Length: 264
Image 1 (cartoon, helix red, strand yellow):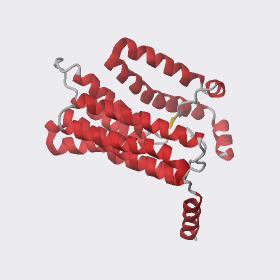
Image 2 (cartoon, rainbow, N blue to C red):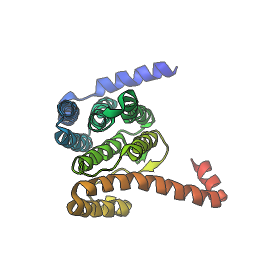
Image 3 (cartoon, rainbow, N blue to C red):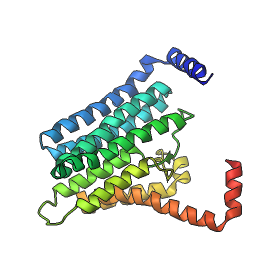
């Protein structure tokens, strides 16, 4: 029965799919995939800074394609699936290959395994997101760390690392820990906010996110590569901290927790 309903839903989706309207957002999705592929090419040549910039470019294209899809009302299961396929290239394979080339190559097969973790868990994260997504026209908050955030955290670290090679410091333990934590967070149930739209309603709904974005810009201008890494790692840690605070509050308010579970 479930298989029959799924087949009917997919046939209906294909029938209602408007290729002429969807070609614009899908073109940006294609640029997303292309940026990820070229990032891998540059990383294989040892041009790591360009590889990082291309992952950031992929993130920009990823943001634009979703925005345009909602503006021209072409959001669909097809677009969601295509977007996920591009994300696993640009934000899974590309940063994993980049961090292996830059740092973990020295640990041989163990380095390969550690480097592959964000790509593998990112794939699980995207599959879960696609299954749980109900309304294609509304961009919900994220259940688990979004794969672009993981990729940009890794890429910003690489950028910082490349500009601080003269420092005699072993990044092995903290970097390995970072890779494991990012991988776990992508498949966790920790909530992460989606970025607000640039309008008064969104600013009122998520004022702290808007303030964070403004502060982040200042930090990047002042601290450059280090500032960029601080911004993304702060975003990652904020989700963990908020989850811990909410867990503590719910633990001390069992009646409220029971009420929320009944409402859910």
